[in-house]
Image (cartoon, rainbow, N blue to C red; front, side, top):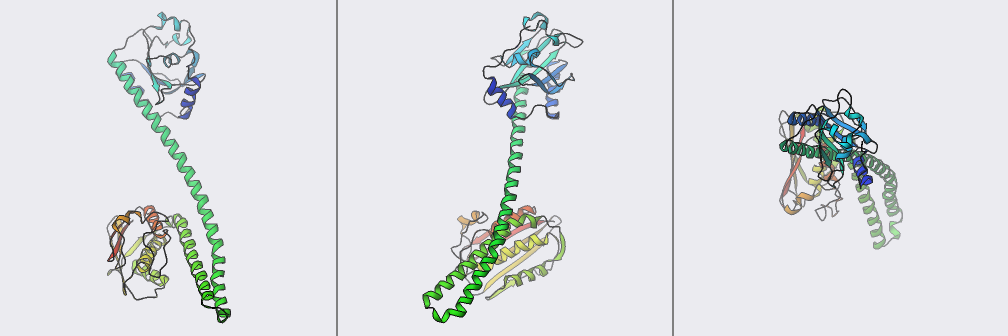
Length: 400
């Protein structure tokens, strides 16, 4: 008996094999179906998908044989992976000196006929084989060999897809963990910054009230700038916290509530200080959905309609319709509009399109990103239609 040699690139080959994380995994129907098909096509009683490890040949799938592994030094597949033409055919192992005295050629179900093709990855590493076996001398046709080679390529596609899926799952898990850490960090920083910012705003008011008479116009301007910057940073921190807390909002349980009641609460929260007409839906629809998430969505959209509006009288119209599957909302305004070439950017985090809002403040690019994130989590979608200097319409859905 001739013990099979090690591959010239054995270390790299084993590294490639182990990268698939396939050894000693559970049986999978996709691979078993291929061995069944291989046996059917070739008319042989046994078909095997083998993977050649350092000392063991592990069998991912078998048809006609109930075995999980074999010793590499006795395995026919260990010879196959060394073949330059990626193919090994043994019509009668009793007449082949390489297998004289091989224990697998003896017993009740000996390996007498063997035909195997290598399973090669994209780098040319032979990971194992697809082989068929008979317990008596036999032959195989060229057409059957071609079929085995086609099936071998399908096996490699399955292995590669499985590997990529595992990598994606691992990456998703790592991203989830990092997002959790980032969310926690953002929450801590945001909460810790709110009190100092509030103190800064209050202090500027105290300084102005107590020492305003002793300050010149430049000094007063410095205080105004300090207060304005503090409010701006406070708004930024609040929006950032809302963005990272939106995942929690999306997990809130659905509630029964009236849409117009929710809209009245939102308008009150906005504290409107200029001439505004807000048109509610004519029909006060009873909703059954995630109230907390919808409130945050509408608060952002209506708030933007008020802020990014240069008209003497601001007009905001909210519409709502429902079907068996979803609620359809529209928030339209007569504001400054969004340039057509910038509309695809508005939902990107930290991306701002408008130079400034109604009060001359520049946005932070968090609000609409939060809206998109919430709508996605609710199984809906959002669209925008806008004409510069005429207005904008945001339309979105929320699944029931």
